[in-house]
Image (cartoon, rainbow, N blue to C red):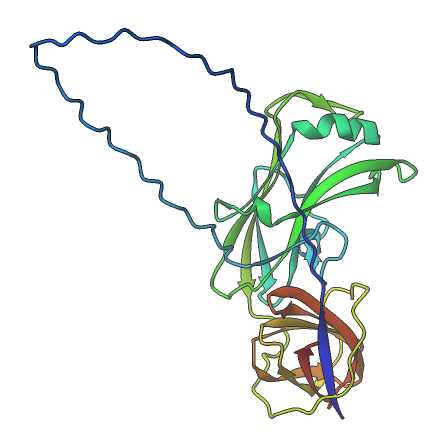
Length: 317
């Protein structure tokens, strides 16, 4: 069976606008006396050196970052999926080994007892996010949300958070991620008081490794079929508990790299380069798929259903 699958663009833009109000006083006119000629020689002042401004380039993250807090995130794993029940402590570097094909959801937030408490305390909260000591805070997406109190599920907290999904890890290239908040002024979350200077930094040394699943291999040309619907739900995190004994042949015609998630008899994640023909190894059976990539430079995704033995291609609509 041969299928075409298309990516539909969906772009979200968050613009933060800050206004700077400058104050100026009315201009004043001053009278000066007419200079009297003198035989005394005067020094001619030398021109002051001017400072040349050198433009600086925006740093490029060492991995791909897709800004999202909790809504509209591509399939990904949380740090807790790797650490299990281990309690992560601030100020201590936690080493996390991940398959390089994984997408990792990096997130930090601030919660308060009520919306009023959140509104009052939020101006005192400063977020930070660095990879290898370079800030990429502008790559995160912000979001207001409600969450159950961890100690009493009948209580709903008001929260604000920032996050992104990181992917495109490379084996042999570890990265130190620092994420958290600093409290710049004395404040309260409605339960406790926090003095200025309080900080909650979390350090993760992320070490990519080879995944358990097979690496995609080059494969032949494919033939298209109808357009799939746009993805509306998040499939479960990748895991394999079945026998890998079949394959699906895939061609990428989107012109950009994309990530393919399969859920069915097993769950798989495959990162495919632009223009690649690939054979992905799977367990026998049918799968729901979700694909995330870009079309003409804008984020795009799609979803549908395929089976082992199929030949498919993905292209921009």
